[in-house]
Structures are given as C-alpha cells and as structure tokens.
Image (cartoon, rainbow, N blue to C red; front, side):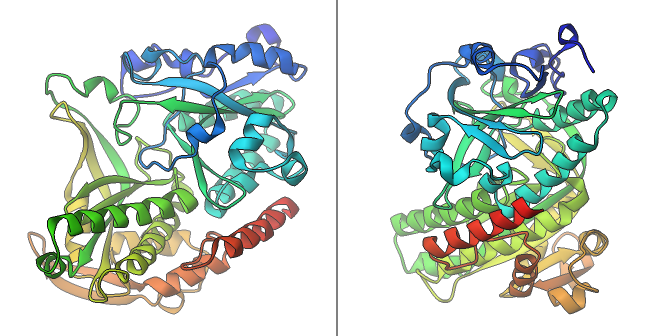
Length: 451
C-alpha cells in the first residue's frame, strides 16, 4: 500500500505545455488515505468556493465535457475570467461504488432524499449508456492490486482530464450539468465533488486549446485518429423557409437544437457532443482524442447518438411541417482539429466531408453509414448475428459530390433504436412521458444494482 507521504495528484495530459504546468491544480482524480475523515476532505476542497444555491445550476448546456479545478483559480482553465468553480455537494461511495452518503447540497441538486438514493450504485445517477461504461471502469478499479491501483487511477485521470462537464440524471429523469472531481482512496472508497462552473469560454473548445481563443490567429492544430462524425441536416427546410419568416426559421432552429441537445445530455454525454451548428446542419463528434472517449464501444455510442437524435428531431419537426425530416450521415476516419482563426475550435478532414455527403443521400427513416464505420460496428456490436438482420442494413452505391462513386450502407433508424433499447443501452424512448421515463429509469437502476 502507498504511504500517505507518497500520495500525489496524477498529471493531466493536454496539447499545451502551459496547461500541463497547471495540471496539479485542476486534475479530477487523486487517491486519498482510506482513513481520511469528512472534515479533512472538506478542508481539501475549501478553496473550491462557497456552496451556491442548487437552483443556480439546474441548466441544460451542450458541448465538450469540462473538468473543474478544485482551487477555482481563473488560470486553471486557461486565463483570467475563464472559469470559477464552486462546491455544490458531495457524494461518498463505498468500495463497491454504492452511495453511502450524500450531503444536503447533492440531494437538493438531484431532487432525491437520502432514503431514495443511499445504498444505490452511483450509476443510478447516469444514463444507461454512460452507466454501462462506468461499470466497466469500476470493475477495473476493483480488480486492481494495490501495486496496480495508481496506474489504473492514472489512466482514468488522463481520460477525465478531457472532461469539462458531466451530465447527471436527476430524480425526474432530467439532465443536471455540473463539474465533477473524484477522490479515490486505497480501499476503493471514493468521494465525488459536484462543482459549479461559470465560464466565458465556448463549450466546444477542448481543454488545452482555450489559450488560443481571442488571440492573434495562428495554426494550432493536432491530428486525431479514429474519429466518428455524425452529420445531420433537415430535409425540406428550404421549402419551409419560403413559407415562413426569418424569425420563424430562427425559432425552428432553436427548437431543433434544444431537442437534440436534450437527447444528447440525457443519454450519451460526455461520450458524444454537439460540436457545431451551421445553417440547418448539426455535427456530433464521437471518440476524438480531445474529448472523453470509450474506443471499445465507439461505434455503438455513435449509433446511439445518430438514432436517438434523429428520432428526437423527426418528432420535433412534425410539429412544424410533416414534409420535413432529419437526414443523417456517419463516417469514420482521421481528422485534424484545432484553432486556426483565434476564434473557434474546428475539425477538418475527408471524414467530415464524407459524413456531409452521406447525409445528403440518406433516405427518410434511415442512417447512411460509411463502409469502414459499418465494419467497425459489425466487430463491436453483440446485439444481433448480422447488421442486415438486426439493423436492417441495405448496401448502396452513389456518385457523391467531390468523392465520386462511393459504397455505403443505410441502417433502419427505428430498428437500431429498438435493438439498443432491448440491450439496456438507452432508456428515453421517443414520446414517453416524464413519469414513464422515471419508472423505467428506476427499473434500470435496480437492474444496475443487482449487477
């Protein structure tokens, strides 16, 4: 076992050496001695700021995940005025990651009483997909020997260093976005700090690139492999724009964004996020090196994102015009990403263009996917003997603008959604009432506890 004097904060890894120099002040995961008492823990996080009213954080926001510094210093997230962290509440978990105690701040934030939540696995506060990923992480921590624990924690720390925000699910099934810091002890018990962040940075700017925003334009980019792009647009929106006002189009796009953002936060975040909106198009990113990722199930997470957001969009669009529907294109490939104009974080590469071209040929009720993505999905999925049988795959060829003759496949959105639902990877089924969602969420939580 490690001695208390040897305890340390595991360093974050980011593209910026300037950010690396601040890693110790903001890293979310560090081991504490098993005997650390609550008063000592409170002293450790005293610099996180004074608690703020829970109602102040019951917000819905999208973008790249965000990890918060414990010290709450502006410099921790890349410059003066860029982030202030405040402690909202704490959750104490036992060695099996069951909730042992929540303070009043955490209970108020999430809408639970102590009797409702204590004794449940902490994954009850996550969506089924995010909870599934975390149960795998928890198994790794439990199975680690004392000598391996620091290495396992270091790997988790590296992944969490990309996490700016986290979406917990409250008692009513709604997302609550907050910052998280996790303290892991040698006996595997842990304390989760719920933090508030006020930030002036765009939420689509990953950690390490914030120093290039609002600065003189320069080429600050990196290459990333195996990134999945999910491009969506609205078929029929041009015709609709001719029959409504500019304000009507603005209201339509706002409604579309809210529908997609809510679906992402409820089910997929932080493993997928809305990267960009351009006109009537949305770009979601999965499995990029600048965000939180889970490569072992990256294709399933992408399918979850594509099917969920498309069905939410179709439901929303039906309120405006039955002729409008969502089209989706999914690609897999390498990208270059970074800041080139001093204003925004952008993603470049053939994969982005391919997802856009596939979306343009996508039929209603389908998801057009690149062949290499379908190959990855076939390897990673364990839901059906074949994509043709379980997801309604149809092979296609089209002459795509700028790309020429291209082979791809179209998956049936509803069949994908139903298959993912049966697997327990998703929960919020389109058009379910809040009360039905809550009952289903409790049933899923009980199943999680049993596992």
